[in-house]
Amino acid sequence: MRKNIWANRNFLLYFIGQTVSSLGDGFYLIAFVWLSMRLSGGKGIVMGGVLSIYTIGEVVFGLIAGPIVDRFDRKKILIITDMIRGIIVLSVFIMVQTAKISLLNLYVCVALFAVFSPIFHRAEFAVIPQLINKENLMTANGLLAGSRRSMQIIAPILAGVVIAVAGVSVCFLLDSLSFALSVVLTVLLRVEPVMLSKAKNFITPLASNFVDGFKYLIDSPFLLALGIYAACVNFFAGPIFPLIPLLTEKTGIGASGYGAIMGGLSAGMIAASFMIGFVGKRADKVTVMLTGLAFSALAIMSMSILENFLLIISAVVLGIGLNVTNIPITTIFQQEIPKERLGVVSSFVFTIAQIAMPVSMLLSGVLVDIFSVKTLFAAIGLSVFAAAIIGFFLPQLRRRV
Image 1 (cartoon, one colour):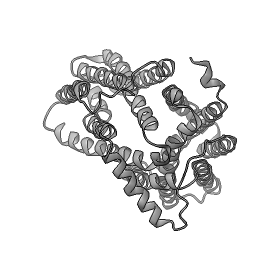
Image 2 (cartoon, rainbow, N blue to C red; image 1 turned 30 degrees about the vertical axis):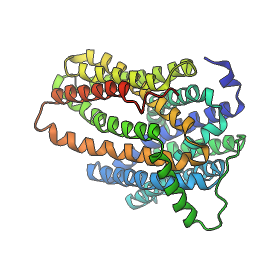
Image 3 (tube, helix red, strand yellow; image 1 turned 180 degrees about the vertical axis):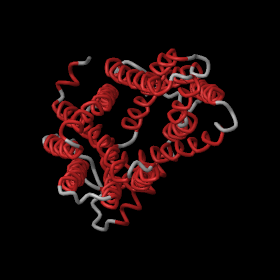
Image 4 (spheres, rainbow, N blue to C red; image 1 turned 60 degrees about the horizontal axis):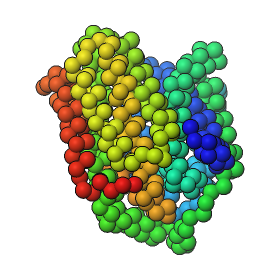
């Protein structure tokens, strides 16, 4: 591990803050699911409705968030959105404690979260290059991704213990405290200034930033090709996660097998994240991305052949491949896009990629009633592998970064 990244005060503060915040978010997620089930009597339609509100909000405000992030001070955006989200979670704790919580209240809180979370995440993406030099970006992204994924494994275990011992409301309290700590650590960050729009009118510069960002993406063959490529990969790979439970059912390994496969997937993603933290400076990012994609494809194809718990090995390889693909893409955008346009340009790319996944999931739901689940895994794997091979020969992507 490169010592200089840990010697960076900004990175250390940010790493600690985001690790604690990710742990708190894991508590919130488990408590939220538990509370929703309790309030609805276990009705799936309620969970579906709540998740739909959040997903729609993420897409809509994710697109709007880009111009906002390029218009205002990003450090202040991080602080304000974290404070608001902390207050929302704290209000849920208070409502549960005072027996004032209802499904309507829960819907409102989720809707508010869906407004401010994408703004926070776009600001977070854009501010990292202001904290860390270009040479260390991939290392930093790898370490942050590994930390977040680790917390996603640890948090549900700890949250289950907290709910059993102290009740569901305490999870919301702990998450609100994690937001408070994140705010304090963000205040201590020394953020490199970026030239932002100083126009007094809000709507006009917002729309102007939006158009300028779109034009910048269109005028950059490399970034445009990378964005379209990422969306296509998401379209082909999107159905994998909803199809895994069907695969475990067909192969007869059941719920325990599903848990083991998802655990293997997470282990692979964590390993890849920290591995990239070691080799971040030395590697050609496009080559790393395409190699990770090829390994992901081979893992997906192997799932159409292997049986029982051998699928766990495929899941580990898939997890490694996914993060070896995703982290370089993130880093390339952070390095190549001017800092003052990073919010709006990344919003276009990530929103399109985000939309591609549910579309492909819906399509896979139709196809799985026509073809066997193993046939779909083979077809998806072949499609992703073909995309990786094409990427190696695509002139727009063969630019060293």
